[in-house]
Length: 255
Image 1 (cartoon, one colour):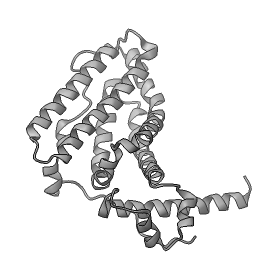
Image 2 (cartoon, rainbow, N blue to C red):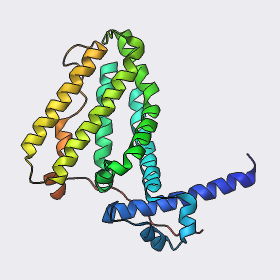
Image 3 (cartoon, rainbow, N blue to C red):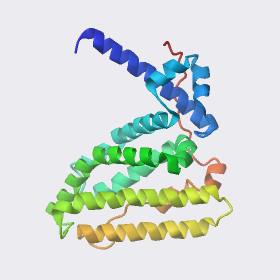
């Protein structure tokens, strides 16, 4: 790659991230659905043509935002799966606990985009980003499953298919809990006790299925802490118990 191309690529990435930073600030302050492309254009003082040079639509912008957020999550979570001092069950438990803890540190921003994430019109983007996220973790998680077999913790009937099936269940578990949480957020008058019971049942059912597929001892795998999930309940969000998300610093963009 020549020097001119490197400079142009760096300039393009800087401008793209400045647009994403601005969108992230607006999502945090007003919500994704309330934010418009014109808001971004006005805040940055750029033309519509300059914006559409990078993103052809608002869903494309959301895709880039979540993709960037997931890359940050990978940097935080991936080292857990590579820790040589942990057993396979410990790695799985810490994988989920670190994932949930990281989400909690990003709570205000993620809540601002949460409803849009599960809208029907964003199903294709959700599917694509879930696939991309899965590809980033699948190889490492499959190594964990193989490690568990070697350590004697896991005794799967179909070892070659274990990684694919278990990881699919883990993704489904996250989506199921997300939909339950969204239902509670959309209907704040709903019983939080009932929501908690349904979440607990969902966690137990998926954990049981994963343990059976892995051939693990019942009760040896712990994926989700219900107390961590409760931090996302409307009552706790309204009481200000969520941590403060650090927003990108505003910068002037030159286009």
